[in-house]
Length: 410
Image (cartoon, rainbow, N blue to C red):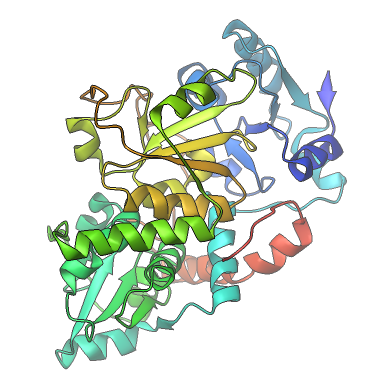
């Protein structure tokens, strides 16, 4: 049986569970794919499918662009126990012929959502030369880098402090306790800068908050130097700042319509075998490894919002988040809800025995078939970086044309 492009569209609009899987390598996927497609190359299907698609009877639709990957993939999925896997009629060409939108790059719908947030909320930003001028005059500013720590260590804004996205509301006041300190949030491009800055604004921090416009790409295009090998990390808050972060983040989650549950209620959700359930602990990897709740995987919150298609390929599934302190899960959940997910936050149960170590995720992919992002590393061509920015600027209009996203912005 094959599934038509219109069937896919109907499922997305109805918010039915569906996983649309692109079987090509990442570099090919990045050239063109439907908005909510997730990418699992055929050579990785056995390693990744049961992890990323946890319910074996969920609707899984696979496609390629005429490379002959679909039949072997369906055979592999059947061998792995998937009972509702089908081909996309006509593959990628069929989607194009139906007149539906094709998106470029990776993590496309999260990036498009970031552009929608800036468009709707007019998230304040500063261009790289203005931030450099503030640094030169030793102004009272704090630069918070919202990327993963390894990205920050590779290259960072001078004076920047690693504060991965979900940590921002929790830790920003520990870095900038004076409300007169201006906070500037950066990432490599645009999305995590926008979402990070808007997180602090949504939480009502008393400081002035700006995104660094176009991140380290904009910094490099402006001819300004980046630091490498930095190790600065934002400290966790204590006392009043911690209590303030918990209260503010919980208020934001309620505004976004997030529900909060206890351990017994989670067991009820786990028992509903007709729904896909993703369970993520959104703390930093080293904290997760030291002790986490049974059944939870790790995805530090900022990356879960940035790479939702990777962590939760089944669109329409439920997502439950956990965080022993609260603000990281509440802020992450607020964004996932706006991205159209049914998301709940688990109130951390003090009586449940914790597990240690990694979560059992498949080993990471190697370099084969990988798409070289124009914003990673230190040797990117200026033309490629500018083209990437130009692409991001057009995503709001492309979302409008596509019409399936269901995003909203609080």
